[in-house]
Length: 384
Image (tube, rainbow, N blue to C red):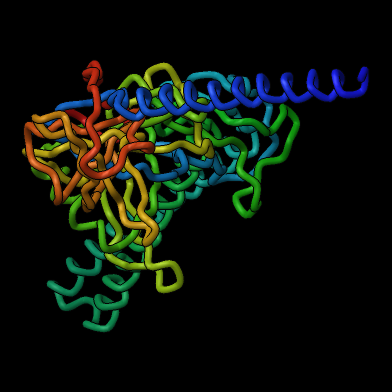
């Protein structure tokens, strides 16, 4: 009897447990059904046409606006140096002084030769005057007169040569004082006092660079060269320079020139941008990035990057929310990236509402609940 009662108790407990399980499954099914009827929540954005300037961001190197190597035109020992490395110099400022004593001695020798040539020319002129007088009185021959005339011509040539030598020695003495031909900043590696200056030396005494303006040498695909040149000619956008730390430079750039030869290996063309550099934040040799305008789209539809989905065939898709609250997955064609958005070239119309968040769970025809996204302005590649 006890065994029978035990079996009956177990059976009763089993029936209760099975009933509880069925009740739970029923409740879960009801909850799932209720959930399926709840529209998905998505965040949306309304497409409105905007004017957008397209940019190419290109790498480049900084070069000095003007760079001059100071080289001596005369030899000698440097007895004075008037500048230090990194100093700012003005045009015409004295940089070095070469010992002028040997050059002064050469000038004095040349001046003595000029005096000698001047006296010889004067003597030859008086001889010709006497020869002309004697020839007029038939006292001397024509040959003697010709000789006197020839001696005067030779004396005149010698005098001209002596004058040229004096002028050259004066120039040499002036060249002993080396001045800066431009305004700029002294580079490193200046020759010290006591060094020997030589016009045939491969090493420059100093380098002066004008970096109040600088050039930015860039390379871009040759196919985009015409667009960049046309945008610059039409004044589309402004050339923005990003310093090595990524911070925008304080002054816009200006397209200075472009090469007419395309690199056969890379297919790139070279362009040069000029930019003011008052704070000297751009120094020769630095690596920078430059945003070059290359076109403008008057009525661009900008799609946030996070709104773009990919189909199994890797086609771009965007979820469009219709006025009745139903969603539609639509294939679109995308163009240039503009900041955190992409220009839609086809597949979308102005005024349509697209899902930018939560759209990855949406299927065609599904009802959704939309929350409008605050519109932000792109700040990097495009300009509204």
